[in-house]
Length: 367
Image 1 (cartoon, rainbow, N blue to C red):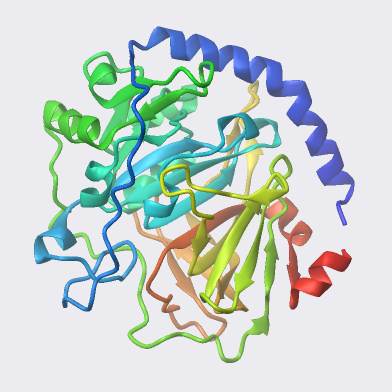
Image 2 (image 1 turned 120 degrees about the vertical axis):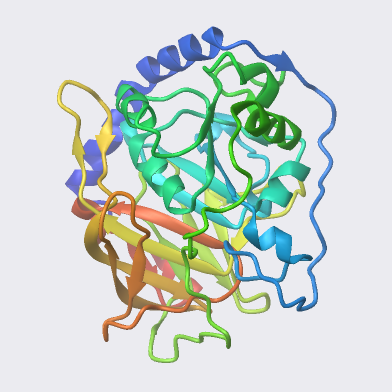
């Protein structure tokens, strides 16, 4: 059941939609871009046998040891109805979904570098918010975005993360292009080839920092969450897109829905489905005199981990703005997540009780 806080917040979606579109159109017009209308081809590697080399993002096998040293690419992705379908979600190793202004969510898809470079169309690409930049830095990623909020610009200028922006004239025409099927600002995309060339232009290193030790701790044997609670359906509180995940026992994956339909990747035409879901509960506020959310992602807090149709309560710790987040079970042990794609929802503390979890699909349907 939606409480009064959710209803009040939902009103903001309509109230702010005009100003957000107007600002977005202005930003899009400021950036030069070239149009590309060619059909996009999927270029997704087949599932590999165990090679002995594993992706830092997913824990799954990759072809060569070199791939394990390559920095990932984190791409800001719009998540409003008008932007659907998105390109490249099923090729990402990690997906973040966080609330932004007006009750909508925005996503950041993080790709292994080889995969990112192979894609012809990714996005669409939208603007930076500070908490996304902090998260991208935790992965030592190249951060790709089309503009930024004032607070985001201030943070990016500190050099916290190497970034490629659609409002940077030195790389905008190289990295980004526009399509004719949608109006600005919903039609800006990045290409893998463009990202590779943009990194070269900026002189960004292609490999991880020598002291980088990765983000997740992966299970060597399947983590069944034996002592967890049954959870067939996960329903975050997010207001605009009303998303949920349904566990598929046959595939062992949580299938993603939003706006009342399956969320489908435009590249392969398949529904987005992930092995792991993590809720990270964080404080939030509004920057004075603005409509923009401030969500600190450092410090500590609570959350949940979902896999294999089960869920457990967890805590998280991030010792500083430059540190990596670690997740722990109630006994204080760092959780080992299952290899595969992971979806992380950043949950505002004030709405944490508005999330819903259902042991069975029938229970979900009754509500």
